[in-house]
Structure formats: C-alpha cells, structure tokens
Amino acid sequence: MEPRWKGKGFKAKALAEPMSKIVSQLQSSLIQSDAHGLLTGCTVLIAVKPEQTDLLDRACFGKRIVTAEKDNEWFQLGLEEAFYLCFSLKCLKVVGDDKCPKNDVELWQCMISRKPNFPDFYKAYSHLRIKNWVVKSGLNYGVDFVAYRHHPSLVHSEYAVLVLSEGEDEGNGRLRLWSDLHCTTRVSGSVVKTLLVLRITNNGNDVASPSCLEKYTVVEQTIRRWHPEQCREDNMIGENRTKCRQQEALGKASLKTKFTQKHDVKLKPGLVGIERALTTAADHQAFSPILFVGVRILRFWSDLAGEHGVVFVGVDSARAGEGSDQPS
Image 1 (cartoon, rainbow, N blue to C red):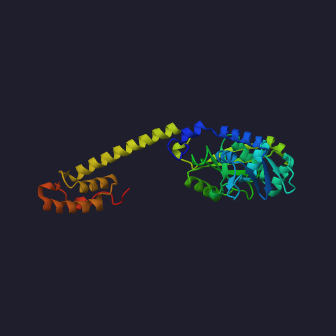
Image 2: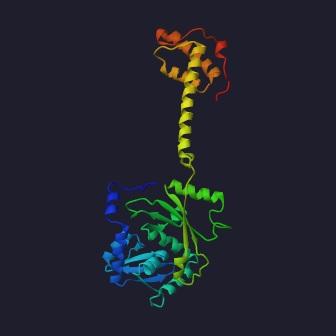
C-alpha cells in the first residue's frame, strides 16, 4: 500500500526532514537539559522548555498538556514512549514517588507492575521505532498501535498493529477465531490500513531485567483479504482471464448474428433505445418473453412513425415464442 500524503508537497517535506534526524535532535536536547520525568500511574509526566516542546511534537513523543505555566510545557508520555527515551535513547531520567531517579532495572520492574504484558508491547514498539516508524496508540481502531511513515500531520498511518505474545494465538488469545480475524481485517480495511501482526517470543528468557529484550524474537505478518488476481500464478490467471473475455465477446457476437438471421430483422436508423434493448436480450439469451414484448413495441412504433421505425419481415407471434425461456 502506497503512503497517503495529506497534502501537496508533504512528501518532499518529509524527505527533507527525516524522522531519524528529528529524533536525534530531540535526544541531544534532552541530554543537555538533563530532563527528568515523573512516573505517575500508567504515564510519565515531563516538563520541558519551549524548544523541546517543538522537538517532542515533531518526533511524535507524548501528548501536550495545557497548563497555566509560562516557562515550562508539560508532556504526558505512555509507558513504552518513556522507556524508549530512557532505555534506548538514554536521554531521559524517570523518578518515582520517592523523587529518586530509577535505574533501568527498577524502571523496568515498575513498568511491568503497572502493565504485565509491557515487555512484549515495548519490544513491538521499539522494533518499529528503531526503523523510524512513528508509533501511536491504536485504540481508536481496535488494535494496539498504528504506524506512520512520518508525522501524522503529513501522512496517514499505513499499518494497524496488533501485538501477539507467545501462545496468545492459542486458547483464548486474539485472532484465534475466524470471526475475530474477519472483524479485525474489516475494520483495518475500512480505514485504509494494512493489518500488521507482530508475534513476540521471549524464547524462555527471564523478564527480570530489560537485557532480556536482546533475545526476544519478532515475527512480522501482514494480513490482507485474498484476491485471486494476486496469487502466485499471476501470469497464468491473466492469460486465462483474457481468453475468457475473448470467448465471451465471440459468444455474444455469435448470438447477435443468430438472433438477426433467425428472426429476419431489418433495423433502420432511429429507435436506438429499443434496438439496444433487443441487443441486451440477445446477450442474455432471453429470447421468448423479452422478444415478444419487443416485437409488439416495434410494430406499434412502426405503424406510428412510418419509415423512421423498425421493419420486421416474416416475424409472427408463434415464431417469437421459440428459444429458451430461461435467461442465463
């Protein structure tokens, strides 16, 4: 699926300012300012300067919170976003209720205590972020994340991302039932997104520390509706389709010829609509009922319009009743 840019020139703008460059600028700015975040519930709050506000917006981290403060701007980060800035980019320190910065292991355990499946979700999040995809919440679409090629103001999201943990596709897990799979793909397709399933496997490693992430395995799968035209034997199907269309065209031409010869029809210019109706009847081999009515109409118009009508030679009601009674 091609990216759907939201305006003219937005693609060029995105190429001029790649997301990797913006994230690098944000990383440098947060390191220089020794940025700290406060862990509260399932979010992390961070106070930043106006220039960092612009970088956070452009890099698509967190959500701005409107406050009465003039000197600082507040951002609300999700657990995956905060841990990515802290653990992967090393540009943010997170403090808890004790006001003491937490190391990577302590923060990791705090995240898991608030979200038991955090390791798998973070692995999926970081897997896409490292590849310079912008990752946002996908709750509006019934999935875990949505992935953008660049900033959401420039381009629509391309993927609806579903995170499946090891063994989740068995038992009572998601996508186990065909109805669940059909609903998910239907919703994704209705909003013009490709369903991307990330299957996360920890390979039996202990999740006591974030170092286990290096041994995780991520398998990417895109799920789309199957189209016969896109199967492996594309050339053969294309050839067969062309032959079928040619045979269909020849069959229609043959039917029209037989129809004209059988009923000895002579059509003059005029009454084009009725001529087309009879042609359609010939296409569908529905001679008897439609032809009978057509003959009556044409005789009426012939008597009414004289030489501008249609002249039938040797056609009577008995002959009009010949042929198939069932349309194909």
